[in-house]
Length: 303
RNA sequence: GGUGCCAUAGCUCAGUUGGUAGAGCAACGGACUGAAAAUCCGUGUGUCCCUGGUUCGAUUCCAGGUGGCACCA
Image 1 (cartoon, rainbow, N blue to C red):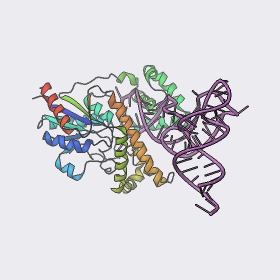
Image 2 (image 1 turned 120 degrees about the vertical axis):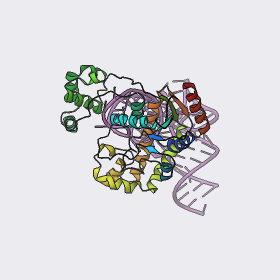
Image 3 (image 1 turned 90 degrees about the vertical axis):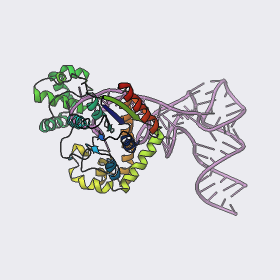
Image 4 (image 1 turned 180 degrees about the vertical axis):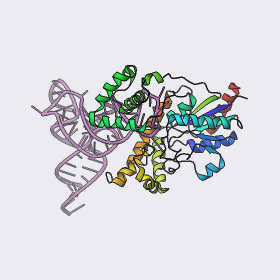
C-alpha cells in the first residue's frame, strides 16, 4: 500500500486546525505540524496551538517541541519532519501535514539544498556591516564572492545578501554553488489541500481571533518572554507588537490594531505563495465532505 | 421651521484662479531554498452626492434637491 502525505494548508485563521482534527479522525491517523512558531514550547496563545481537547483527540507531532532559544530553521525542520513522517508511516498509510509555514511545507515536499547552518557570529558581523557601511558594501562583497548569485538576488533585500555572504565566508565557496534545487524524491505520495475563502470573511475571522487571543491571555504570555524579545523566534506577529507597547513606543490600542493588520498581511503573503503551487487543490473551510472525497479519490488514483 | 457650514478613494482629508484629481492610513499584486509569522519589491483602486443651468469644456461657478453637522427658534 503506497503511503500518502496529505498537506492541509491555507492562510492564518482560515480554520486549518479544527478541520485537520476531523480529517485525521476520518483516516484514523496522526498530525504533523508545519508551523514555524507553534514548534516553540514557550508560545501557545499567540501561535494558536491546538486546544487541549484537540491534542487529546489526535496525536500531534512537532508542536511545542523546541525552545525559542534554539536556532531553529527550515532545514532542521525538514530533517525532523521527515524522520517523524517515516516513523509514523510504519503504522499509518495516510498522514496529515498541517500548517501555514510556506517554506517548511516546501522543505518537506520538495526538499531544500544542503549547506551549513549560519554561524551567529558571522551573521552578526554582517549585520553590523550593514548598519555602519550600508547595503552597498554588502553588495560589493557579494559581487566579488559570488557574481552568479549577485546577478540573481534581490539587491535591495539585506536578509538575502547577508545569508549568501555568510555561506560564502563560512565555506570559501560561492553560495550559488550550493543552490542546486534538487527536487528530492520522497518515498510517499503527496496530496495538497488549500483552504481559502472570501477575503473580507477571512479578515473578520482574523480580527476576531486576535481579540480571542487577548482574552485567552496573550498579553501575559508576551510579558513572560519579553526579556528575550531579541530572539528571532519572537520576531512574530502578536508578540513584537506587544513588545513595542511594553517599550512604550505605541499604545495598547495601537498594538492590537497592528497585530490585526500584520496578521492580515501575513495571510495575504501566504495566499500569494500557495497560489503558485499548481498541485494545490483549493476548498472553502466548510467543505469537509468535498475535501474527504477529494483525498479518498486521489489515494485511489495513486494506489 | 430658519440660518450657516460640509459632501472628493474603503477611512481621514488635500486640491483643481473652470481643462475629469492626490496624500496618509487601510487595501491589493508580486518575489522567495537554513531568519520564512522572517526579509524585500511593486500598485491609486474614483459617477469628485444627485438633477438642471452657464460654458467649447463643470468635480470646481450658479440654482434646486438629498444627506450630515452646528447654531437659532
